Length: 223
Image 1 (cartoon, rainbow, N blue to C red):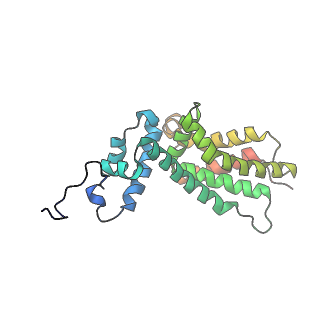
Image 2 (image 1 turned 90 degrees about the vertical axis):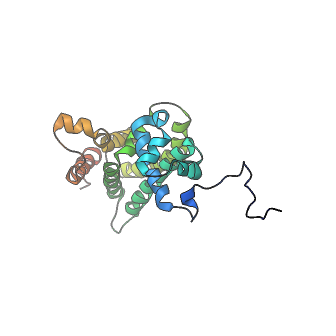
Image 3 (image 1 turned 30 degrees about the vertical axis):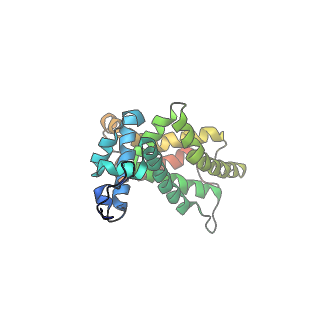
């Protein structure tokens, strides 16, 4: 009679990849998510291959299946991770400080957003690519991530405008002007460098770009 150890597993039973036997490899999962955002931004969802993502992450292809069970889930997880980082960054500067007003809050948010997209140009590339067509991924992005952020910013802009702290422009225009002005130089860094001779990947450029964005969008501070 065969012992329990000698019994074979059921063919349908899901097993972990060999390197997962000692427990989840958190660092590998994070590397996969970082690589996935980059590859999806470069190739688009349809053009991205999970094999390329695994290779860039230095991970076993089986780990992608184990963690995410498919390309769509991997895309959502990579996007969610990026937005989690963005939300954490913005929350850090959004809190009201003594003597604060709405203009000061908006300025801090703009500066932090520029720093974020300067460090992660793939974020804007992916958002621009998915936002240009009406489809399930664009709607999922808008419903789960963009809409909540947009609503908070819109309320802040409207309060600042009502107090005369920033120029009165339609909030829809303010939203897309800010996004385009903040991120385009970084999402199109190769063109920027070739056309102008300026390298937008440097920290000094990101800081100067934030200064320009604040001056253009918010105007001079209240007297």
